Length: 151
Ligand code: RB5
Image (cartoon, rainbow, N blue to C red; front, side, top):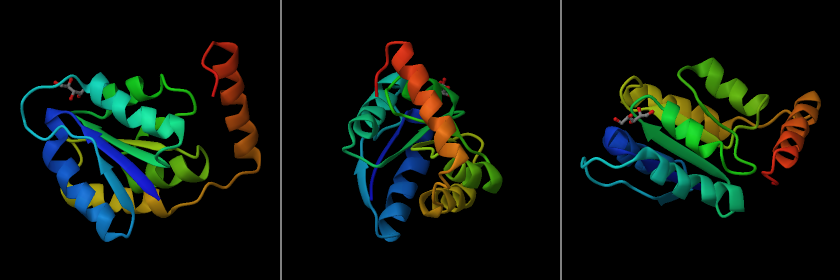
């Protein structure tokens, strides 16, 4: 699996650690920065990661900002992207089982390093359940089409 990862200045440390952690799990990582603590605008990083997921160049994306919220809002502007913040085991697991979440948004301010590793591991290893959940995702894709965002 190819995982694109990016952060703004508030997620730099966590991103660097997670990139290594994901590689140690045997997955390919495309690290899209930012690489310093100099301020950047989170929509620019969200665009780089979400574009890769939307086009299929990456199967998954991970975005980290102060809260995880701005990244989530920006990433969801891209067709086929399903991005949400996860803060605990249950949201990480159900985001995969029910929502087939393909972009995980994390808070660099709130989520500690060990918890982040744990959430990412759950999120990367949990499959989508399909069935009634697929019917609902198809309805979301239809909403995208009807509102000018074809996937
Ligand atoms: C940057 O100061 C901050 O707004 C950003 O990291 C994020 O928390 C936005 O949602």
